[in-house]
Length: 318
Ligand code: TXA
Ligand code: MG
Image (cartoon, rainbow, N blue to C red; front, side):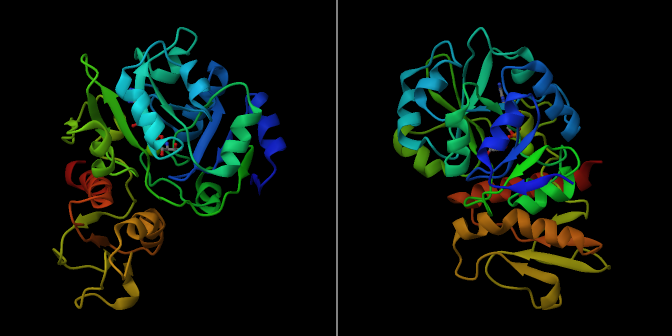
């Protein structure tokens, strides 16, 4: 099993040597590697069993460093960066010539993000290269929101797990790209709400249907999924032993001990923060099905619904 600790120097040394390190961010834990070295990036794909057509986000710690990863950007990109970085926002921008093809899966765009976690910021400040970091879970499974989640699934595949405690936001970054006129286009719902973004951009262009052949594989219709079949709704749709994932209150039809309530006070931020740990916990209990409540379609409720729908699709389609 890999070591878990707060030793930034050790993490930096491993990353400089091309090894994998799990890093905390405010959204979810990332599985990080040197983003400009193809051999290091390849280790990420192997460890996660991730298809190589699914590109990775480059993480850095300043706008000046982010600028070096891109060849140009529309004015709105800088406005969004100023408003929300460091934070749960990823921007898709034209890539600089030295960005490896493996990072972007051959796309002319590179995904860039400045994460807000202080430990990872301190780590990035020591490095003169960006970090490629997808969520630190096997491809298709639920993203990790604690060091223990990473250790449970990738513990034998990662050199070191940098312990930043449980993540604050709990759901992956919102991904925004731009059209030819420089208008903002939503590619993935996430930890920064549409309402907050639209205050800066005006109405976003949305590309959000769940698709088979997405332009952003985080949009794959089956993703973020537990192994136990998950069903969205308010009542069990057949016999069997059911667990339930609830927003504010438990259902009367399922034993209380088989239900997890995400936020008794009804706060979407608290629910998002607890979502993935609760999905993992329910998945570990051996129920036949997990019944998940649909959230209000507002603020982070939209991103929660998006993740639950993708978790459900796995069992609807294949
Ligand atoms: O919050 C997050 O974004 C976390 C933390 C670790 O930063 N990372 C994360 O990475 O969620 P990952 O790889 O699990 O999801 C990144 C998404 C994928 O759906 C990928 O397809 C999309 O970003 N993406 C990356 N580069 C892209 C590109 N050049 N064009 C389109 N989509 C891209
Ligand atoms: Mg992921």
